[in-house]
Image (tube, rainbow, N blue to C red; front, side):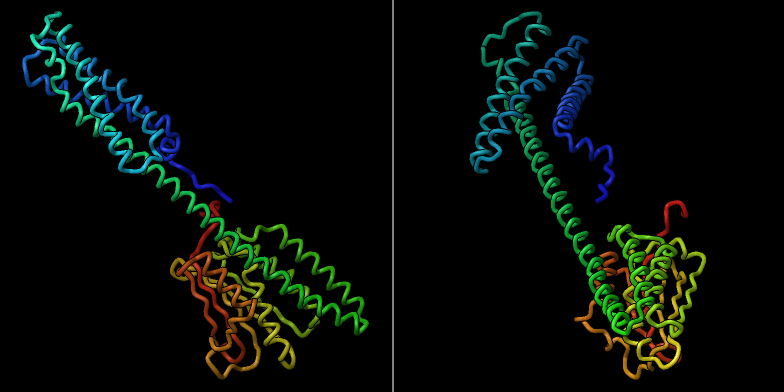
Length: 364
């Protein structure tokens, strides 16, 4: 399964430790800048810049222990966690205010002591709001990261389930196809047409090798898809000999378009089973492709018996081939596809698939 390419920001978000230190440093540098700009509005001595830097550094250091404390209480009941965060934020704010004010009196006031020790608690309420905001941001960012992780896990699980479904649908074709082919080989052996039976087994081995060599969830070029189709038709030609004619025409702009692997095989198999087998004379299958409004259109037609009713009514929900194809298209393209069953120009059935045009990177 291919991993999505992550942006630098996503890679940074994934590294929680680095992301914390980036925000921690950036936040306190921002705090220092705001205070410095505020000091420019007043006539403060140049030494006040050092006070601002030391105050921001004290705030930087005092909030680091909160990170490790909040990690430990993360699993606590929400009410208790909020209470602890408020109390711890207040205690931290008081400690920061004392250090900040002591620095101010020692450096800016040249060691002059205030008359009351309560002066050391000045601005502690404002600092409490700052620390409380820091705590709120910490919990908010951590919760957001956890939501993103859960979202990524859900997307990964959904992607794995989607790919498992596609593999199941794709591999379901093999037993269905093998059942029909082995029945045909058995019939040839009973009729003692050993040479034809041997040839058919040989052709079958080539087709299965191609099937195994291609990932079921990968897309292939239409040209490669037709090569696989010809391997399958070689098997059927052994059965029908000269009674089966194939006409394939791909427009040049669609040859390198990407399609689900072996998407055409069940359509051909359906034509052979319900149309060619019931035709008197030569059975004809026509495969066409063209582009229209940034879409790729694939059409498989046969010259089976004339259809008197609405072709869509011929669709059997319990059938494997066409139902499987429709489910694969739905899984791959969502609502961006069409699967139509139409009456042939003179007789028979046409199955038309319309999907978005996707090209190989080298062809873009």
